[in-house]
Length: 287
Image (cartoon, rainbow, N blue to C red; front, side, top):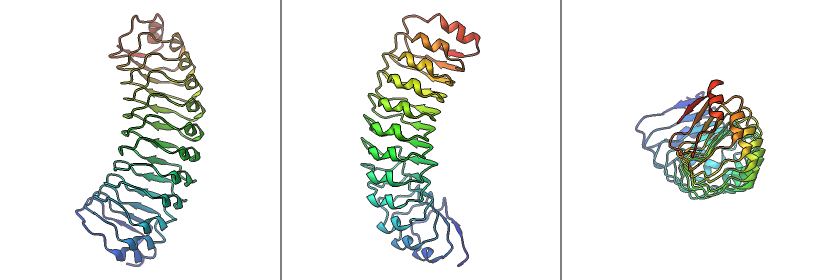
């Protein structure tokens, strides 16, 4: 037993995790997803060799303070529990590359989440219900994927523009009324998902997202699109379903790589002439 490096207990009906697991000196990976755990033994914080820990899909309302002593962790999954608070000591997990806190009941995101310099692969904070995120997110300048969907966000911090490595940003099902101008600094962004917010327009800086391929704006009360959208030279998919747009900027007709423009349930006063040209270049127009 002392040579065990990986334990996979996913998808059982466990109600108890034995504390002596922490005594396994070489334990690298512990997977306990999809069980019925209501608590975690504090001794788990002594599993110094642990690099990958999955406790998602249980019934945890909190985790022991000792968990934040596992400073060698590379991935941590606490999703799909009932956790209401994450302490500032999460910032001590400086080797984390992947963090999933989605589908909990978090009231706020700790400022110290910005102290995770190696967080590169993903950060899931979806479906919690918090109303804001800290400006310290901007310090996660190596992060590739950020999911903040299904919360109650009304604004984003200007510092989000400092997340220089971000390639995918998911913000749908919130209450955003505007995007910060700094969004245009996300020069590596390829996907921007904004479905079902309260946006009425976009900042002109949206046109600076030169690598953007997918822009989803459906189910927003959009009243205008800036001409700057026409500068998105790599845009492939533009979703404008169920907006309040009455007209489209002529610059959209010059998008060279557009393959799909979705205008269903958007009542334009008239179809622009350039729609025909887009169809001829192979773009699917859905009306």
